[in-house]
Length: 145
Ligand code: FES
Image (cartoon, rainbow, N blue to C red; front, side, top):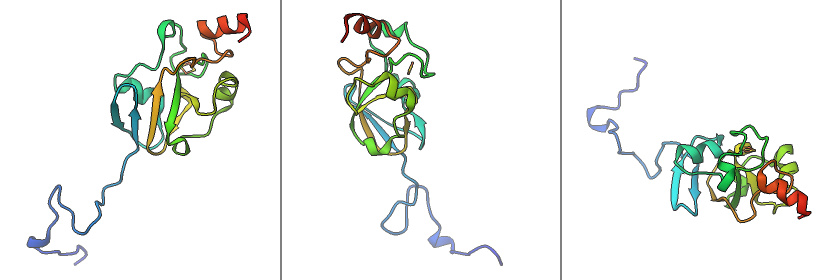
């Protein structure tokens, strides 16, 4: 007999776990601070896509119309990481360019993978850096800020 007979009385039932620990794998949780929303995602999920799937807009103002759609070419999908920076993919070269003048905890959501729990603030103040291809980035470049 190859299958383990655990007996009718000892069979696992949905929602019931033998022992102290839940054997189900945990999924990363993204907490969107400003929206007061929390969503679970698969490990390696794209942060921008997770936000949009949750009905959260990663863009600010005119950048809703003036963005690259998530291919890392505009620098407008900026989020501020409040907690869990260590649970995100490292900053990419594209982010180094677009966010060169932004704080280290600012990320381009379309270039960021989520590997564990994280709390983010979407559309942070002065989110788009002067290197971005956004309207605000262009204006900042013109006025030298
Ligand atoms: S959507 Fe354009 S860089 Fe992220």
